Image (cartoon, rainbow, N blue to C red; front, side):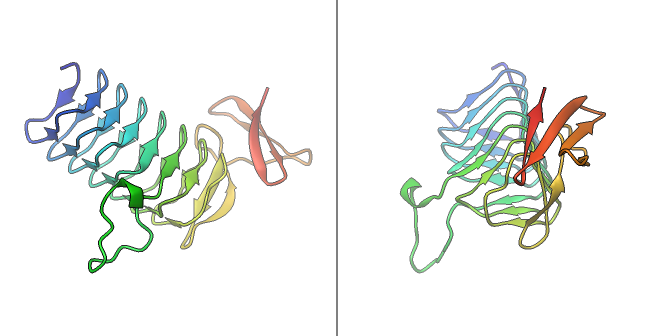
Length: 192
């Protein structure tokens, strides 16, 4: 085993866990899950069956990542944030099995704040930043800053998570990442 698992954590059979990953107290990684290298799972994290998680992800305490969710590399999930995987859950009419789960994709470098809720069936764009407590109900563009209930795009952030200000030509610069970005047609892209 080339990853760390606290003695109170459970990793089911048929899981792939990458080198250098750490799984802390009372966490459960369920069957069929694939986790990349150097990820960190805080206390009381549950990762559902057949979930795919990239490299260098950080999942804070009390997060459940349900079947149907995919995290690409460098994704941050803040404490107690919530994913869903069924739009209309009903106890009287159970929807059990992968055929009922709507897919959610969280792209590289996305950050999700504490207590945010991500409704299933959407994509969170690269390097987007979801504010704490937000409820995200639709796709989020790359580099978007989203806050509120329901979540709305209120600005743009760099790959490093710094708020971008754009000049009259639609060019913004991030001191931290040392990268330039262009805002055009309400979309942001990194430029050379």
